[in-house]
Amino acid sequence: MKKLIAAMALSAFAFTPGIGAAQAADYPDRPISVMVSYGAGGATDFQARIVTMMAANEKLLGQPMVIINKPGAGGRVGWNWFASEAETDGYTLSAYNVPHFIAQSIKGGVKYSADSFEPIANWGSDPAVVIVPKDSPYNTIGELLDYAKANPGKVTMSGAGLFVGHHIAALQIQKAIGAKLAYIPTKGGGAAAMKAVIAGDVIAGVNNLSDAFRAREAGNVKILAVADLERNEKFLPNVPTLKEAGYDVDNSSVNFRGIMAKKGTPPEIIEMLAAKVPEMFANGRVTKQMNAGGSPIKIMNRAEVQKMWSDRQAFLQELLKDLK
Image (cartoon, rainbow, N blue to C red; front, side, top):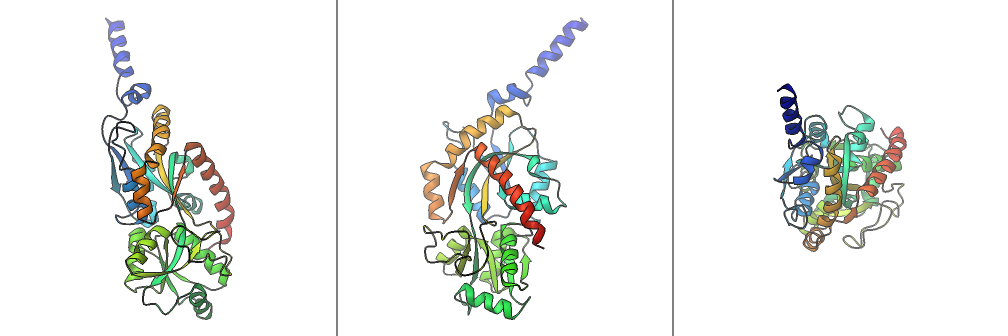
């Protein structure tokens, strides 16, 4: 009898949902949550809702993806929760932002690092831009930064948080001009940072190209420069890079976005997602809506994202030593 009970227990364990291959065989059989560490309406949230809209297609995942917002502290609130409290059953995934979570883990005070997560696929590459309100007296990046050099600490500049792409761009600009900027991290991510510029609460802001593109189309802001190595000919052909305007600012702040799982998620599930999610991102309906929203697309598979994370980790370790 004892042997029979033991055999039954082992059999039940082997076919319990959530354990290894047994879980992966039927995955997914219900909706998948995707946590976004920023507020509704910002670039990450806006894009995450677009790139996941085809998830329920039977040829892709066969189940919808539902966005859950957990904003705060430049992404720290959401990623701390994901790293420490989320389940590893594949039904709770997260959007990632690089350099954001890597830079934050390097600076410390968070519960995560790149080793806490498993990349699935990348959907976008969104450079930072410098913006001012539509009625600002500054019409070029040179005019704004000349004033900043002559008046250290007086140029208020909003951004989505500390040690996110916006902050890194602001720190690089500050170093390039040799004068302090009053960088103001907002609590609601990029959407709140954009509102601060539009309302005239700050003199300028650093934001995502995609957010700024939509705000400019609505007639609310002027875009003065792009923090990248080349102009964005598709969306901002007449906007110079900071480097071509004479400032030593590179592409360190470019915001890579994608989806990741928590470390410990069954490898069978990670492999399945890694195969299907890039197809989902590349769907024609997704591409059309991303382009309409001024959102640069950069699809990378799991192996490419792993390399990107590793390269950015090494790069940011060196960069952040000198940026304070």
